[in-house]
Amino acid sequence: MSRALTIAVAAVIVLTGLVLSALFTVEQTEQVLITQFGRPVRVIEAAGLHAKIPFVQTVISFDRRLLNQELPGEEVILGDQRRLIVDSFTIFRITDPLRYYQAVGPGEEGIRGRLNSIVSSSLRRVLGTRSLLDVLSADRSRIMAAIRTQVNTEMSGFGVSIEDVRIRRADLPEENTQAILSRMQSERERVAKQLRAEGAEASQRIRADAERDRTVLLAEARATSDKLRGQGEADASRLYAKAYEQDAGFFAAWRTLLAYREAFGAGNARLVLTPDNDFLRYLQTAPVPSAR
Image 1 (cartoon, helix red, strand yellow):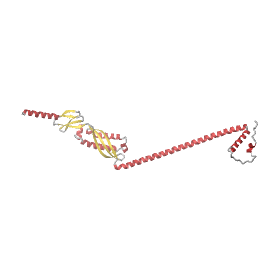
Image 2 (image 1 turned 135 degrees about the vertical axis):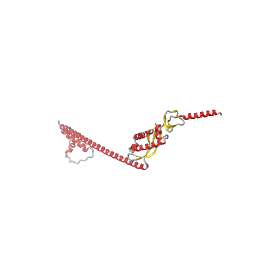
Image 3 (image 1 turned 120 degrees about the vertical axis):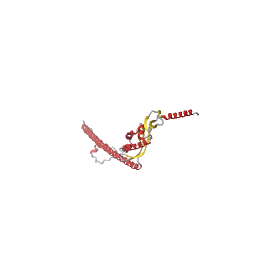
Image 4 (image 1 turned 90 degrees about the horizontal axis):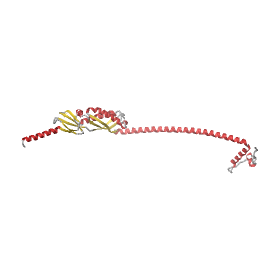
């Protein structure tokens, strides 16, 4: 091989290396920071083929997707002085590669350590003002929103955005579980006794009202009955007197005959009377109709 050909091949190889060193690709899931001798030069967010100065500028890639950071379980003291073991996770995104690089460098280890510390502090601050029932109720979403807002404010200087902070699991410490369960059982029993007492009181009140109404109704019914009976007896006496005045002899005989029926109707009655007793007069002599 001639010397000129060797030089040409070498030149092509060097040129090819320079071109390859100058070109780089940015993926859809990436954002790139270009540094020159360690100093940030520019940020590239558009995907595609880009160029840089070979051997002078360096490409640092950052993930633009949602990232997850899990915080190990830690004990938190709530506002009602109860202790809770809380496991949480945080979803965040790198939004400013330049600020991120200036704050923690090119790797993710630094930001994850800072995030753990800030999330832990925010959890303690917010949960320290809430009770156990708040954490376990529907109010939990508002609690997590307050935590997310605090973490987002503190992490804004690191070039990241906090998308969500969630409590994955909240457990009572083992040594406190039995005591809290016993206290909850005692509270439920107290409420049950109170409800039973209120129910018994209401039952007695209802029975007393019903008995009073019953007594009033019976008294009114007796009064009405006595009034109607008195009116009926008065009407009967008046009618009897009027009829008696029309034929006194007939009604005297009729009353005597009714008395006979009452006395002798059963067939086994016995009366001890003298023969001249006035009660037996119609058995001896038939009644005479009175003249009108």
